[in-house]
Length: 212
Image 1: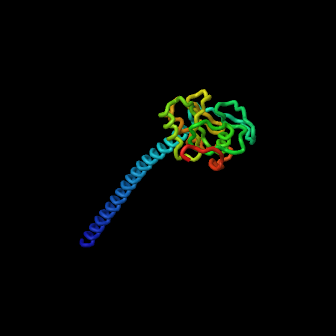
Image 2: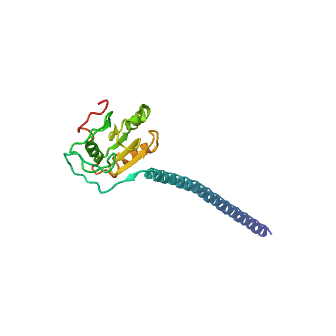
Image 3: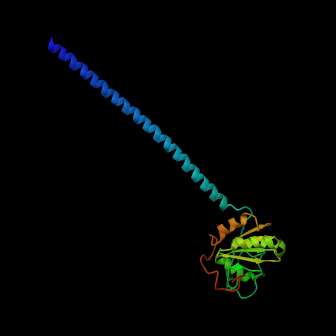
């Protein structure tokens, strides 16, 4: 009789142990499922964030790459000449030029095309304006080039547009000094990929900019 009770007790203990093991396994599975769900949720949030960031960067890059109104010119010669050059664009966007470049900076009087073109060959952006646009607009243009080593600002009385922004092979005409495309043009084309001789000097040439 005692042995029967002992056997029954052992059976109950074994059954209870199996129930505890089964419960522990079930809980472990539940925790694993919760962990996977949390991980997937975090991964989804991170993925959305990364995709959003990459998309924003790509869109910003595309916006920067496409500046409305910029005209491009190719096949520009690069000979050094000592005689005046007749350029097809006003102001010129490149071509034959003087052996000496124009020192970059702000000028209050017109500068020679041939020297300015040489500076653009070195990566300078040349901003020109009709003298009658007003002192306020001229001051705004001066602030655009302030602190930028490869920029030139000068009046150009015969140009057809109130303001023209030019780099080697690139040109943009605008009506106002507050046009946001001016800064974008400088950022993209100053020492930009179109520059024939990037890194060449924009000082030590000819011309005395204002304040020098």
